[in-house]
Structures are given as C-alpha cells and as structure tokens.
Length: 105
Image (tube, rainbow, N blue to C red; front, side):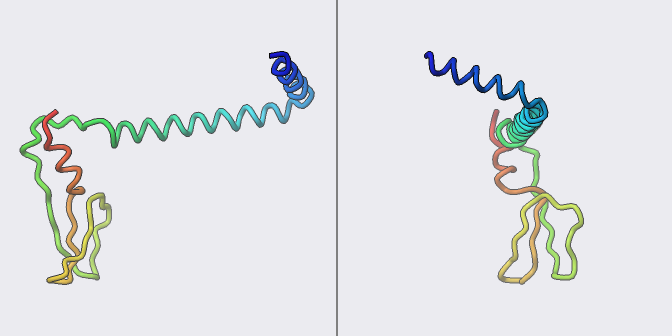
C-alpha cells in the first residue's frame, strides 16, 4: 500500500510540473470516453433494442431488380445477384431485420 501511495504522489507531482501535458492527457481521455459512449449508445439503440413497431405482421419486404447500369442512390437493404437472371436483387431492408421486427415483443 505504501508503494502505491508513493507512485500516486510521484505521478501527481509530474502532472503538476507539466500542465500542458496534463491538459493534453485529460483532453485525450475525455474524447476517448465520449466517443466510446456515443458509439455504444448508437449500437444499443440500433441493434440491441427492439424497434417500436405497432403492427409487426403488416411489415413487408420490398424487392427490386436492376441490371448493371442502374443502382439506387440511397440504399440500406440487402443486395444480392440472382444467378438465374444475372440481375441484382435489392430489398428494402435486410431479411434478418424483417424477421426480428415480426417477432412478438
């Protein structure tokens, strides 16, 4: 226990002698903690919690097919090539999301 207190005193003395280094170290830690908190909050909200859907049985999965010369601008669903027609088949959102949303809460 005595060596831990000695180490803490030595560290505090060093931080007080170099205020610029202390400011950079504290700012770096604050940014790292803030970024991790924001990232995990988004992951929790988007992936772990269920979305509030009023009637999950009425959800549908929209499909569209297109050739190589066309691609949708803003796209969030799944995108696969159909081997029979060699067309790209896209959906409104991934099938896993539809399955998860249709599950009873």
